Image 1: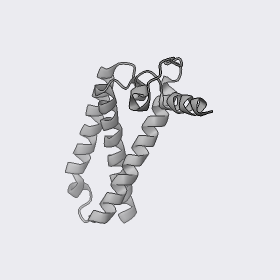
Image 2 (image 1 turned 180 degrees about the vertical axis):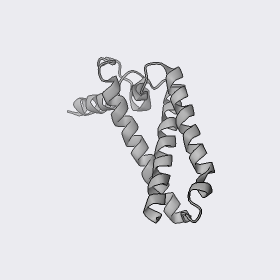
Image 3 (image 1 turned 30 degrees about the horizontal axis):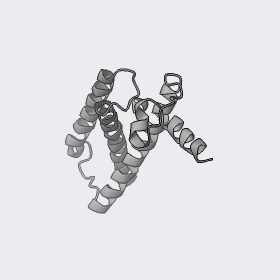
Image 4 (image 1 turned 45 degrees about the vertical axis):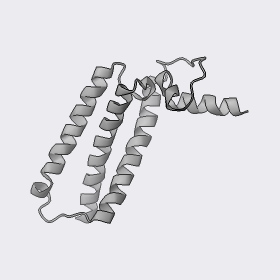
Length: 131
């Protein structure tokens, strides 16, 4: 029972985390992190994913009447869920946007580089510059 609770909790955190990352990327014009070409779709995606997660968490005791996740376990599961959401967002957005963004010639660094290129393009250009 505890493993099922943990997996459901990680799934909820993962789903909400991907939604929050999409909303944050859309708000900050980081088009290289978006799953969709239009910011409005990313906001809609965030609204749906966060809404589903909130519905599951508010009905938690109805679905799992005896299931409780202790504080330290919950922190660890939250961390795992958010790391998975971040990795998924970086990889999925890089795959989805690979053809959309030709390699830019500007010299933006850090998070600003994700405004007009994908994460994988930004990392590869960084390491090419180091050579």
